[in-house]
Length: 202
Image (cartoon, rainbow, N blue to C red):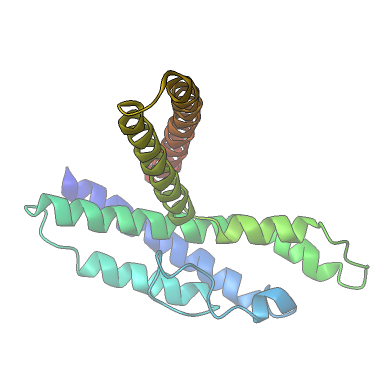
């Protein structure tokens, strides 16, 4: 089963390489000042490669597949496959935006408004599940601080006067409400990550 999945992945990467070569030969980034100022197309959390050429990133994926750990080492194998999935998805995102880049390059003579389709394309290209994991990390840190605030108020209650206790209880209730909203945001981000990862497996 795993061999079949791996063969399918290799076929997908071979197709990706062909598309990346076509993308690079079109030189769609060459006339975009924003992209020319970038040292790399992707975040370091997704690729080790630093390049403005998509084929260089596909080569890294091929190397990752070649050096996959044995499937018996389940955690290392699953982690490596997840990383490769993220990489494939990131490159597909760039290739999917090709019509937008081409259109942008053809209409260079027109004045460029501040909020163009081009800027939206850049945002889409650069976005990855890495950003979602960062968002999740920040939400968890906020959750931790809110829990600490509640614990501190509960400790203060033990030595509080009736008037102080009323104020502290109100603060605890308010912080609990914030904690509820924070946990809702965590669930929403986790759902987004699952959706991204499902798309990578298609």
